[in-house]
Image (cartoon, rainbow, N blue to C red; front, top):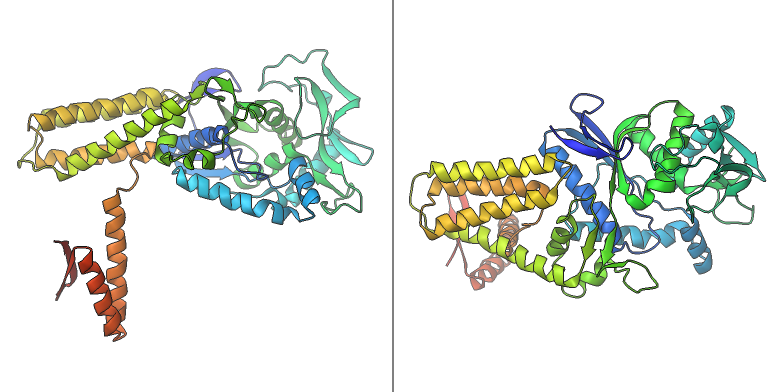
Length: 466
């Protein structure tokens, strides 16, 4: 049984989806005002492992991750550069997906943008105004925390005597301290300001918190299974999401809440003042393999702090190289025919160890140990020449099962080369169909220079290396 630490209850709980085998999951995505830093990508890698393991377990998954493309920083920077929000955010959205691809993060099923869901936000705010959980002040709309007695149930912060309202409100998108002030759902903007939308309660723009409520409930329903994100979002962002969502619907917002812990850099808190707020691009530009970065980011369980050091990253690179070398050695080994049932049973046991660890609140460090135990056992068997042909296909299948979650083996250079060869062969066939024999011969010669021999047979083109 898959179990998670549910922040909402502060307990390890068996995972039981709301509707049979269907899982609906929302993960807070990036605010696209700059390049995402490595701490952000620890959270997104945790989300990717979670996504992959839910699919591994056979669940039918709908995964939504938002793109926050309107907030104070974006608006201020766009105004400073005298450009639109779209012009400001477009390059950072493209960069985020490029970085995510480099890390091997699977794309969410739906990636909504805040600017495209203003109508849904207005609808929720209108409901909160009508039921008395929101009010207008100086043209802006605020959520009335005192009207939601359960406020604080996620963060477990004790707010007794510290829940304030009336003149005590917060307009910024983030709080600087752990108090509970009525927060802005809709911020009044002047007619002269470029960034604003018309609403029944006046021209303005949404607060940060209402954006996620609107997008998650639009695509996943008023109650869904999993809401995840970084621990830095637990308060106030996620706390406020719960208040405004449940305040509007009267229903449970999300059944399970999972929070990824902080990442430190060389034992220091990551911050601009320390100059250690590295983006993924900063680290890749130092020559590090993205797969090694991915490995390091999930090598410690998501709910434990990770100390990211460049020494550890070098170690992760060595580990990735060893794993790739192991797989290649197994693929290329000359093996006797037959089967070693004892070896296969041991390998099957390592997969079971992996599943047990992952079922235990995604304990990736123990799950990785199971993979390394498999590698050690098979290497020993290869050295003693007791691995047979049928064992190879079985072991490679098990490795693929590990990697469907870990995503650290990637494509080998030879596999990429094979794909390029197939593409050239298809281009040559198209040239022949078009009677462009000059281009056909050119491709044949190009492949021959790479040591690839083509054979035109009645069953089609075959190729082999010299």
